[in-house]
Image (cartoon, rainbow, N blue to C red; front, side):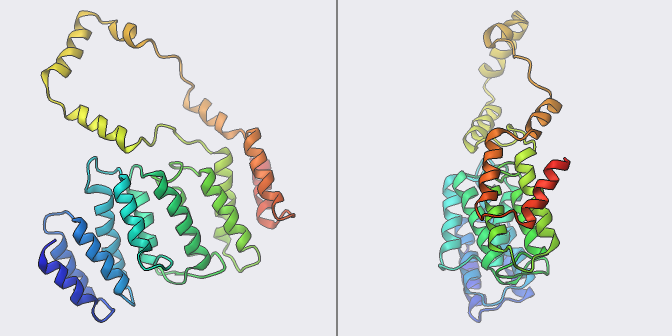
Length: 309
């Protein structure tokens, strides 16, 4: 981090507000080389904690800059490592308060842009999203607002983005922990003035967990991605030459060495299998419905959806 950037960030945060011109100056100073250092990311986080009001321009800069540092500054790009994940959680928790909308948007951005993140960060994001929806207040990045005690259309949209993000618990689908969170939010806001979008998300989200198909190979670990990147970057003649000679001298050698692959089920067959609700999934659903001693309107809508489908 340049000395000038650190001084600029402190100066801007002195009065607790940031202007569009301030954000432009920070962008020019932080990104001359297209990279964000850890020191710069920490200065940006510190400034975010200082600000009493956060403009759309500031939130955009904060989310883009810190998100770039978290997701792409360490190889392999797109795979958040344990150290960066721990750093992000520590920064968000630094002020001991519920994450601001800028921080919530940052979490969603990381999950939308990353290919995979550590399980600890997945669990942390679920808890933060739940807190933001149930207890958060104030304007959001897209012009809506967070409201405590209910789920409005803006909050439903934010939850939808988070649970269907590529790096979420179950890529392009809903995982069990996320489905559990949807039930907890539903129970906590059952009698509140909720938006229709929330009921739709609850029904679709839980049904997706029970019946949705998710490609098990859509996410690989950071460690595996690192191994593959190292292999692809290996330009030694011995690697390519060895495999080439094997294929030329004995065309069937790979089948003999590695064995023939067993026939795999087609995607249609996999989708059909995932669509069927298993015994354990049914037990899970029954336990959630019986927890409050009644079948409420959200659960009835879910059961009707499953029956029709």
